[in-house]
Amino acid sequence: EIKPNVAASENDPSSFILPLSFVTLVADDKTLSVSAISIKYKADGTICQFDAKKVSYESIDGGRAEASNIYASMRPAVKMIIDSIDTLHIPDVALLEKPVEFTELKYEGNTLTARFHKIELITFGKEQD
View 1: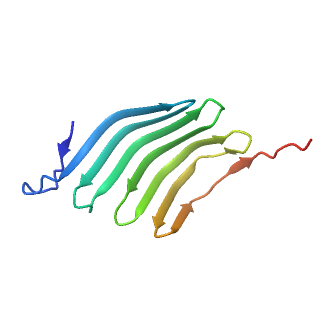
View 2 (view 1 turned 120 degrees about the vertical axis):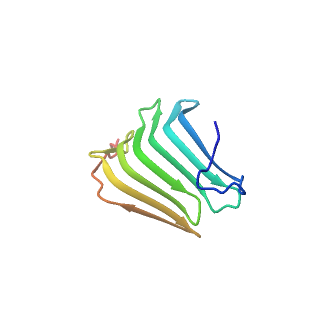
View 3 (view 1 turned 90 degrees about the vertical axis):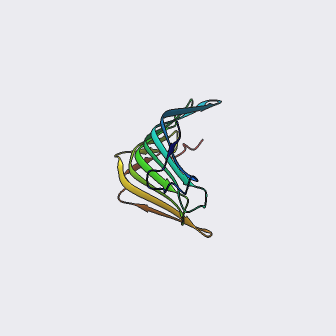
């Protein structure tokens, strides 16, 4: 169901909010699930936002990630704020020891900026033959 943006005037039918309770994408051996989604958009480009309560990723090789309370915006800059990265496991590379509270990713021009509150990560080294 597409709902008109309650903040939009009656003369502006180009705004909408698209709520989705759950989406799952499966490709080959990877699964991405997103819950409690809200997409806000305005045709003039001033608003393009995405909110989700939980995002989960799993792969058959044991890779896994889970994040809570995600907000993304495409205007005025591409920006993502994640309240918590709950789990992260990259097989044979790294494992998140504790959840990461508050993460901000921002892309402006040719620059990607990442801000993390605190990261406790276990890294795995390759064994030499």
